[in-house]
Amino acid sequence: MSSSFKNTLLVAFSICFIASILVATAAVGLKPIQEENKKADLLKNILTVGGLYKEGEDINKVYEENITPEIIELKTGEVLPKEKFDKIVNLEDFDILTVANSKKWGKDIPGDKDIAKIKRMPKYMIIYKVMKNDKVEKYILPIYGKGLWSTMFAFISLGKDLHTIEGISFYDQGETPGLGGEVENPKWKKIWIGKQAYDTNGNLKIRVIKRKVDPKSPEAKYEVDGLSGATLTTRGVNNLVRFWLGDDGYGPYIKKLHGENS
Ligand SMILES: Cc1cc2nc3c(=O)[nH]c(=O)nc-3n(C[C@H](O)[C@H](O)[C@H](O)COP(=O)(O)O)c2cc1C
Image (tube, rainbow, N blue to C red; front, side, top):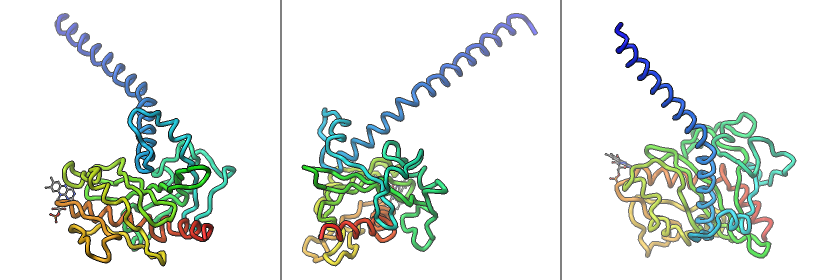
């Protein structure tokens, strides 16, 4: 091997080596920033769905001043006392999928009940209460389920009457932009506001339908327009909302609150 070829190889190898160290260092170094951004984005979505987000305001401050998170047992609707918290279930870094996949805190969903197509779910869930003068104004509930291409994560907010929907916000989804991705369209999200999740007897009624809602229909207050050209994403949204607001999701918690409020 000629010495100039050896030198070329040496230079190429050195460049690759230095570049790989730089990339690895950047990846490790940027991780905390990415996590912080993810957390800030989550808080922004909680505030948005709670009607509290204003551009330019300090997200952390608005969150601290208005939101009280708590962890509830989905099966009973009971609040989990702080003494039971651990590294996975706590108010600071509750990650839904980590909780769902944990042996202690998550569970399998039987196939016939798994309309949101998520296979596993947390037994305990974090929820966020929007407070005003020490009273609950709204309940913000995390919901998620399969669309066409992706698992879609969102928050839905219920008013203090526990049946009026005050907002919905998808913060993580991988549907096609312009089709299923329209779940993030502000105009579509607005349609949800004021819709009734339950009837006066507490039966789950909310549905996302394939067509546009007929405003004259007696069911109109329980119906949301489907996304055009995205029937499968629409079906996914309908299923995930109905799963989480139903008996296997927040149903027991909502019934318990009704009991306490009456
Ligand atoms: C490239 C591509 C991306 C698509 N993305 C979505 C999507 O994100 N959500 C969805 O429901 N349908 C999507 N579709 C359409 C579905 O394949 C299916 O045709 C559609 O959901 C039927 O809806 P329609 O009955 O409203 O036409 C996509 C189709 C193509 C070709």
